[in-house]
Length: 225
Image (cartoon, rainbow, N blue to C red; front, side, top):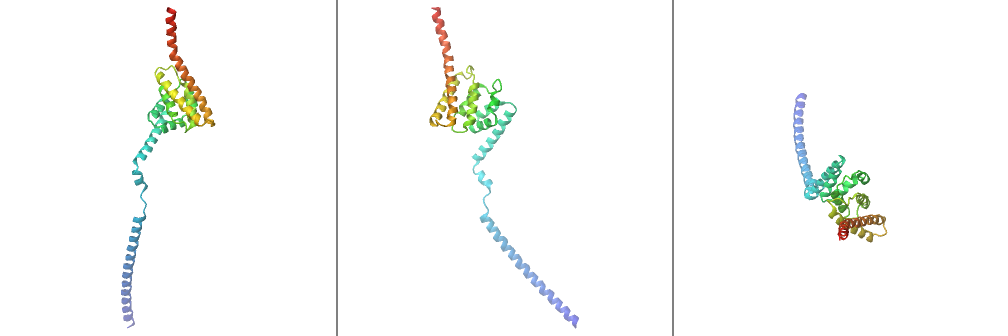
């Protein structure tokens, strides 16, 4: 009898436990589904927009930055292998003053202009003077050092730049004069004053060179008479 009772109780207990386990599993599954659904909703409403999508919306900025980096790497690579004229010519022809300044910052002017003959050809040298003097309110120390060395290295007799040379120097003188008048008491004004005197002196030499053949011709004609 005892064994029969134990057997019956065991069977009933097993059935009860199975029912409880089934109920618990169902409740747990429902709870998990509710939790996952809630997290999914929160994720959809609070997840920020990826940065990449914002960047794609402004391709001009990305392309400009990327292109500038590529150009910077190129001019620096060309300069490092000793092709200084080609490096500056590339930077100046890119119509990007930031690229020109980047190259100037990485090539020391005393070392550049101490090479004889000057590694920069006259047209490149004049273009460098013109672009650096376009705005004298920024990178003043760097521009002063380059303009100072460039004026010393100018070849006034070079036929390829003779006509263009005077125009560039007159424009440089105007830019220097404007800065000095606007900032008379600054340290850079005193330095730019030296550049102004140098550029004006070079203009006078060019004028004299152009007038000399006329004077010689006139003198020769008078002597023959």
